[in-house]
Image 1 (cartoon, rainbow, N blue to C red):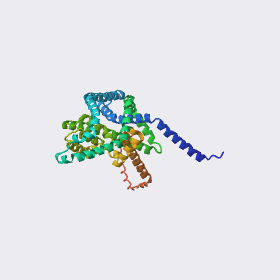
Image 2: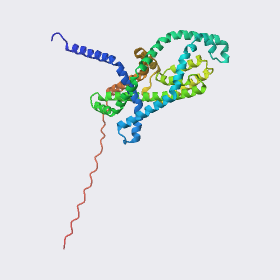
Image 3: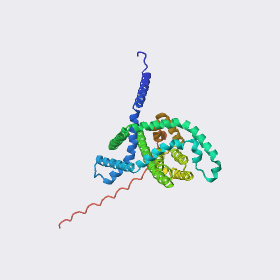
Image 4: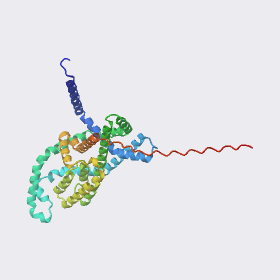
Length: 374
């Protein structure tokens, strides 16, 4: 009627709705990012809350117990900042003040620490580093500028420091409602698939966040202790940077530590490299496989691609969220493949085993006749 094809109209209407939805997501991308960070923070707090629930065994209601857990976490953060915050801030200020001198190619040859065997090659190695420094700085400056701008933008929005814990508190508080929703969804036609997907996402994200927190803590303690004992300049600052950069599973932290030690004239750079190499072997082949489940395993080529693509799409936020996003997409693909395999696999016929009939029970003997009186 009126020359309008109903099927074409439905396709156009569906496409318009999809485009409108994507545009709406683009408009509220900052809010969605805050919600996603709150979800990751919830996965970090929930194991402590579950442990507290098992300890109290229902003697404390859910909401007051969650408040106590949050207060304990905030108290630990305040204590850690009070103990090490001033030292890290002083080292960061000193490094920023000395950075132009440390990166000055004119004095690099005098400050370059070399073993005795390489001493005759000092001028040649200094010239090579000078060329790499001058050429690499021009290529690295756009990336550093974008990362710095993103960090300044995130630091300026201090309201998120308050909003994220509040949102995660509400999410943990409403966890039973989400469980009931999953039970209701499973009774629908496509419910088992979506329920498995949501359970898989929950497992991947929880494993990733908890493992990442433990890896960052282990890196902070190991690097801080060893670098301080070795007398490396700016040891606590470099340990904190290495702990934060655990979210970027490439050798950015190692390059930063070696670079600072090298350009500051530290004489035992070889020991620093040996320690970092030994710790990376321990972390990559022992600690990381122990903490990370199989669902969080992401191939290194995908990690590098995700980091580069995330930086191009969303700056610092994209860098931090690229690995969990890739792990989630990989898990969804695995669930889709498993459900397709279930649908295409023919059901096994049910085999009915014939059994012999049970023998009839023997007839009960008639009761004896009552005695008669004579």
